[in-house]
Image (cartoon, rainbow, N blue to C red):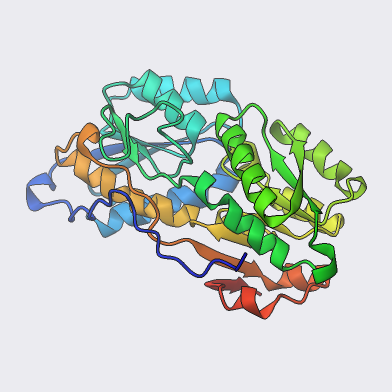
Length: 332
């Protein structure tokens, strides 16, 4: 199978960016909640990207905007409590970071517009009726990550020596309790069959589970590691995952650029920070009176390949020319 070329993925239903807040809105202060699954240390850059996007559209903190951030610290109970707290605040919108935070916000605040900054499969999770017609109080951005799993496996296979590619064992780090990860696993199995790869399911729940899985990597006889990213613990512990894979001398690939930036070898997918910045357009639209139910969910228009050349050097990998020609960006 040939390597996939750079693609501009045409969204099923793309919303045009909302215009800046108009003069008639100038006297109103907009209150936006931001419900993030992990810690402030790991997630604040994504919140900052949202604030930047709002500023570009005329909503500025200290002038006409109040941001109410809450961090779940990887605790579903804390996420639910924070969502309930936000529901009592009568916010103009709540921006969420993943399936868990979106579900909690939608349940606690059914009358508040909920904006997904990034999420894998909101239809499969039962949060919206369809991408074109969400139908409730939830809308925003989705990645449909299952559809791009074969491409990531193909890229990981391409960096292996020719003699090591046939039936190569590739670990898949995943949360077995995450419905999205279970769907991705089925997609990965189908892609691996075509590529003649053997997938090894590596289950990890929470930080402790990830640490245990990383400790076992050197003994698993793997040639590479694919990280299912859209889980709070995986994103929160991305630097630890990258370091653990490096200790095990394993090349890694995941979806968001944040993983490559944290030390993973490659990422192929969307930029989480950019998703948060672009989700600001939804905030402006609902503030201006458009119902979330009437705003189609956006899909990424570009999927980018990022290569961490520093990690490649530490692993002793000379990146193939055909892979580097596809790369949209590198990390030195």
